[in-house]
Length: 174
Image (cartoon, rainbow, N blue to C red; front, side):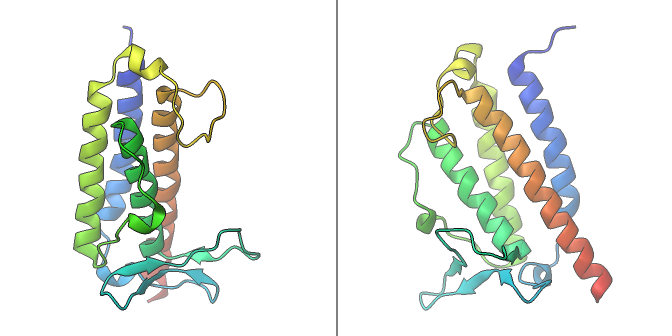
């Protein structure tokens, strides 16, 4: 039996999502801003009622441990920009990606991004997968939409593992 590249990428994405969903279903609102170490990146409430991520344009040393809230914003940021590229829209700037804040709204936001990504994956043809892709490669030659889809799967798996580990650490530290 032959499996198309698109179907393989979608299968890999769904496998990754099922592992992520295990943690999303168990996420408590208090998990989001729990700081596991003195040196953390988190989300900060702004004067406008929104949230802003801790950020540095060059990586600090030591690298701060991100909170689940920060990681969930980070997922929303890179995924929103990947969706912008996949749909031929101008990619949003980091500051334009708004984090919902509380647990249920953040989980709903991430699940909505999943649905948007599935819609993109489901319409891809082999020709689409072979097309050049600028994101997240910053002009690296030879990178295609298939590479970007594979990167989304890998990035989501990494972030899901980070969130899962933080959630488990918080649960055993109570």
